[in-house]
Amino acid sequence: MTNIAICGASGKMGKVIADIITGRDDCKVVGGIDKVADSGADFPIVATAAELPVKPEVIIDFSHPSTLDGLLDYCQTNGVPIVIATTGYSEEQIAKIKKAAELIPVFFTFNMSLGINLLAELAKKAAAVLEGQFDIEIIEKHHNQKIDAPSGTAIMLGNAINEVLEQKCEYVYDRHSVRAKRSKTEIGMHSVRGGTIVGEHEIIFAGRDEVISLKHEAHSKSVFAVGSVNAAVFLKNKEHGLFEMGDMLAEV
Image 1: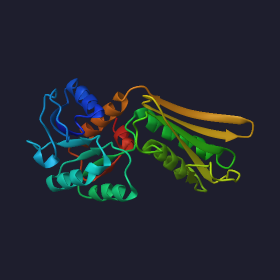
Image 2: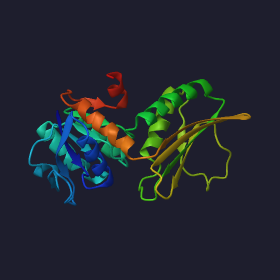
Image 3: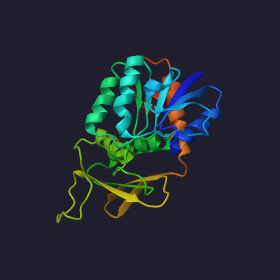
Image 4: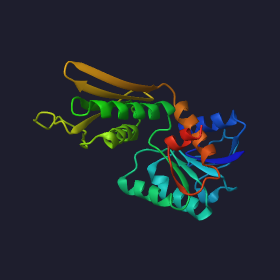
């Protein structure tokens, strides 16, 4: 049994995670962290990790980048593993996450969906085969409440592609002010925000007279929540280190 605390427990994703954990017999929620208390929760919700009534075995963070410092301080001080599923971190914050992994187990990925991680692997294969002959564009779509753009997942996909390219590409986020032809050494990233779109990511490989598209659609936030709970169970009893979806899938 893995005792889990949820950071962002009163938010939409926090509630989905709690509901998923309720239906499992290998983990349970022992506390939540949120500035807003949810009166309907069947576990205590406090404002900061330091106020948790019991020490969790793992924390799942689906909140906001502003909570990172406090969470990392608590986890490092108390030796608590953490699953970080929030997006929108700065390069400085990502560096802090990697530094914390030298002391505690940290599971960090821009997307908890199994399908997205498979998409990244397929994109790497395609990029390795098509390099130099096809232009690469990434289009991501999300709901109108999402703050960061492009999405962390779009950047993750771009990074995965760049891993296998002999000539690394730069990311181009906006072309409307640039009066020039597209270069061969760029990956275009485009963001769409509207309605209640949960998450769509498409990678386009455009060549001469042919186009190859790889696409993933998330129809429910539960796909991310399931992945984060699986990651929490995976992380329990791990030694310090930085883990991601590939590490977890390798043990399946």
